[in-house]
Every structure is written in C-alpha cells, then in structure tokens.
Length: 219
Image (cartoon, rainbow, N blue to C red):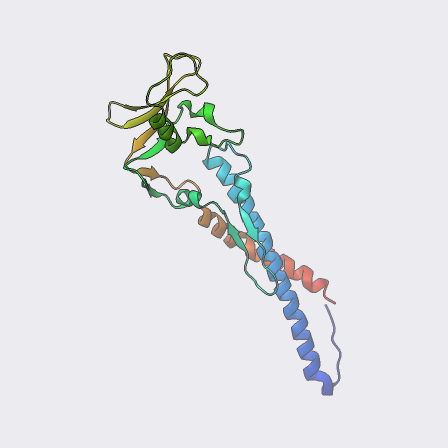
C-alpha cells in the first residue's frame, strides 16, 4: 500500500498528480492486456487453421498479424492479410469472375505433382495457363514430352474437366480440375469468433494481472 502525505494548501495539486500517475498506469496495463490477448488469439487462430486445412505451406498460418495497442491508442488488431482467404472465414458461394464455370482442383487428382515446395500450384498448371497452352498448341506431340499436353474433357455429369497425360505412362490421364457454375465454400476457420472468444475469456484476466504489476512498480 502506498501512502501520500501533503499539506492542505497543496491538496489539489497532489491529488491531480496522483490521479494522472494512476491513469498512466491504467492505460499502460490496458495496452499490455490488449497485446497479450491479441497474441493469444493469434496462437489459437494458427492452431485452428492447422486443424481445419491441409497445410502444405507451413508459413501461411503464420501470416496472422497483430498490430499492437499503445497507451495513446488502446486498440489491438488481429488480421490475416490474404483477401482470397476471407470466404473461408464466412462460408458462402464462390462464382467465376471471367468465365462461365469455376475450375476447382480435383481432390486426390494429379495436381500433387504440380505444386511448389511451399504447396502452391505452379503458375503453368493453373487453369487459365493450361487452357492458354492448349489453345497455342492445338496439335498434341507424340511420344514423351517434358510438358504433357492438357485436354478438355466432359465427365458423365456433363462437367468439363482439365486433364493431362501422365508424362511417364502415356496411357494414363491425370485429372486436375473440374468446372462448376458455383463453388460452395464451407465456413472452415471462424476467424472473428476465435478472436472474440479469446478476448471474452482472457482480456479481463490479462488486465487485472497487468494492472497489479503496473501499480506495484509505479514510481
């Protein structure tokens, strides 16, 4: 417990000084609590990301960013700066932007052989580039080639497929993409809920702890 002694004539100035000192500590404690909570939310987001997705690029979940709060600006921000990921946090329909169908990777298809070390699909094996290559090379080459020729095919459902011949076994087709009018995306990573639940659970505890320490060490 701290003791403040002052004369009656200096009471107003002393009280003002003590209030300002305590307010300074409260703001400091609040900024520490906000930042600690934000980083706890970041850790939980990364853990949930790994549970919800097949993580080929292990650096991708680490893109969750925290903008720290300060005593002057008591707001901590948690964000994921990848706009294409937004629909996975909300769920909904994904529609084609420049064509009639949306080319969706076929699960278990041949794309596993066309990914970079980080897990991204190689640019040359993305739908638009495969179709561009097909248009530029209307006559397929015979024999083994380094860049197998892509084909457009229809399955029994009337859906368009993009496929390429296996470069080692020419009788085998690798099916890469299927065209759908609309892609239904499930909510797989409830970003906002994870952050809110973390704040509801941890923020008050973090503030109480930070304020106790700040008042104890105040000069």
